[in-house]
Image 1 (cartoon, rainbow, N blue to C red):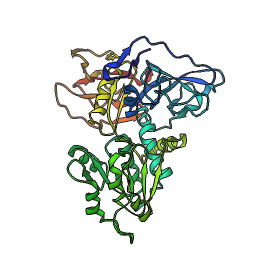
Image 2: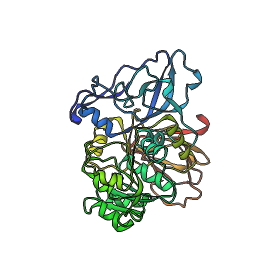
Image 3: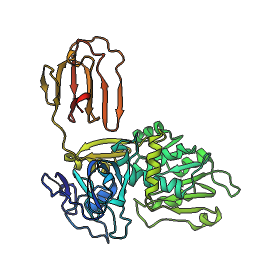
Image 4: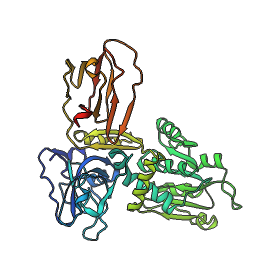
Length: 429
């Protein structure tokens, strides 16, 4: 199988694509999942760089947020799992091994992944592989911190530092879902604008202004009588940001954390802690029920994970660069499967005008419906003339697009898909 290996600790040059890595074989209590999508996380970068006190056997296939289809099961595993769409809980919880997928064992940057059967969580109808793969490390962490541990409630005011990353975006969406007022902090005008579009009530560019001063201007300075400040502050930045966080939170307020990206030695003023009776609440990752709840929220159209980019396995180094250079808003995903060659499975005439593009006459499509996969980077438009198009709609089903083409009559169509495309007649599938 194809796999993207982290061959050593170092910079992105240690990432190597192996086109013929050994396929995993399920043992007792295990399953093999055909990986459809895996997310890129800062944890992957930390694994590549090397983490003090954590020994990683190299080379390793990283990638912990994984969604796909169960392709094989080992002895003792219910065979009904075969063919099911699953999200993998990457944490080993059986007690037989420790750590998580993509760290202490091979993860999702490959066409197939070996997991314990207890890590399989079925993806409900209405949730795509990409949406599911966006969840564990970002949205799962945000959900547990905000809801399970943090008790976010309607009418509260929430300050979120680092709001443009995967966890931060999840915190903004969850806070708005629960009816809170959100003050979201990010480092560039483009990111603050995206946060506003996402629903943030107030945005702060912390490279231009102090977030504590912004909170005081918006909410008022916290006072011992309970006036001013935010009800909840989310700070997984750490370092020297904690003192101003304390000074932003109201009497009896809560400070939530799930990490410390800027350093775990915190600058804390104990006077604010006791005088304002703050609760400092930690959250460590997620539990399987948190992931199930998130998928139900997606299926109910209450939550839409923010996906910045979906890249092929060959562009994993670029995916990591985007995170390292802080050019990401939301999640970056990798699709490990090899991209299909462009093919049209019908008797259409046409020529390839350039790589990835074919022009065909739509008369061959008359009164037909076709499935197009994958969904990313697909463009279907008239190429040579402009006859009107009526009742032309896209419908989505998992990762497939169903396109009614009956309205394109006697015109040439250009099918453009840089990421690869395959058309199928529905009656042939």
